[in-house]
Image 1 (cartoon, rainbow, N blue to C red):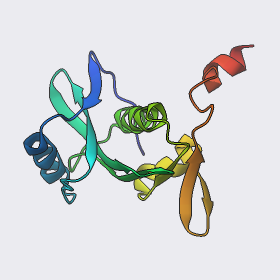
Image 2: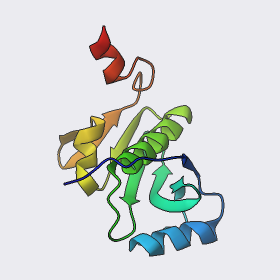
Image 3: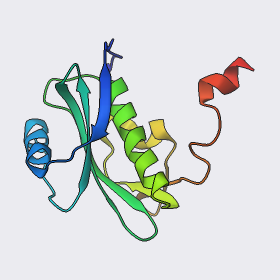
Image 4: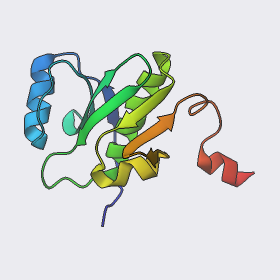
Length: 137
C-alpha cells in the first residue's frame, strides 16, 4: 500500500541538464529520452521522482513518471505529475495525454480513457479551488 511521506522541503523543478535527466532516468530504470522535457522531485536535495514529457501542437504527452526502485512516495509522484501538467497548461496546450499507468496516476489526476488513450482537458484544470477547498464549503 502506498504511503504519504512527511517532507521537510519537497522541491519539484524542471531538470535543466540533460546529464541530470539521464542520471535520474537511470536511477528509476526508465529509458532516457533526450528530446523530452523533465521535472524532478527532490526532498532536501535527495532525488525522489522524475517525469519525462513532450509538448506537441494539440497536447502534452507524459511518457514517464517514476521513482527509484524501493521508493514509495505517492505524494511526490502526484505533485511531480501536477507540476508537469501545470507546465503543459502554461504553454497554452489544451490537453494532456499520459502514456503510463504508474501508480494509477491517470485516474488519480482525473484523466479519462477513450480509444486506449488517457486524456485530460487542461482548460480550467488549475483555475478553481482544489477538491479539499470545495469540500470545506
